[in-house]
Image (tube, rainbow, N blue to C red; front, top):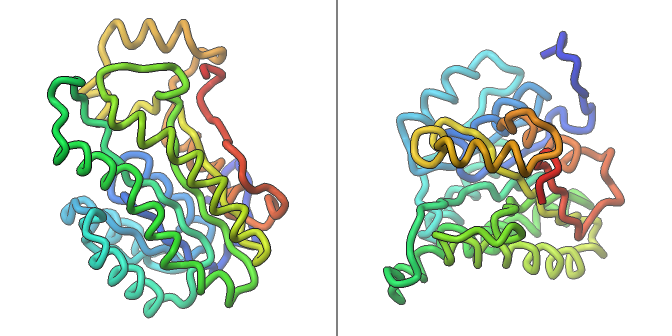
Length: 256
């Protein structure tokens, strides 16, 4: 990464970073980028094979990342995994609440049980992960919490109403936490991607109509990729953004 044309952030060297949903897609790029900065990265995911493979692939870095399999809808398991990252690397200075699932669903198909499940996988764990790292960040006299949002609700997208409800709520969660944690120099921001063309998105959702929508919607006619999101996360995690909090940082090529 030393030959990269992109920024290096000295304040991230040796900093403990926790990333949820880090085994594939955008999360995988987060792990790669923070490891390349010299951070101590712990990442959680339900996909054990992908998580172990990623940790092994990055094993020659300054700090080999720690992968822990975790179902983030199980809050006790989430708290245990966070404690394990802390035990391995020390107090957590950066939290990236990335994990989510944008499975499509109709209004008619939603039940109370599926609604609760959608909120659990897309919103609830963000709060409890933040709660679990607050004392770490207080001890460090500062920290950065980055909650992953989505432009989907801004665009009034259909076919996944529980998902867009949860992603809209991320904005409120972010601002509320930023107010309460600001006195401790803990910053809380929402990183809001557009349609990031991960392997999953290409295989499951992207079609010719979607490509037309992207071309029409984005001001910059370039495919939005995980690394575009990861580079903004680096900035928000680093001390360079020390006075940025309670904000929605949209990375979408100018669509929303």
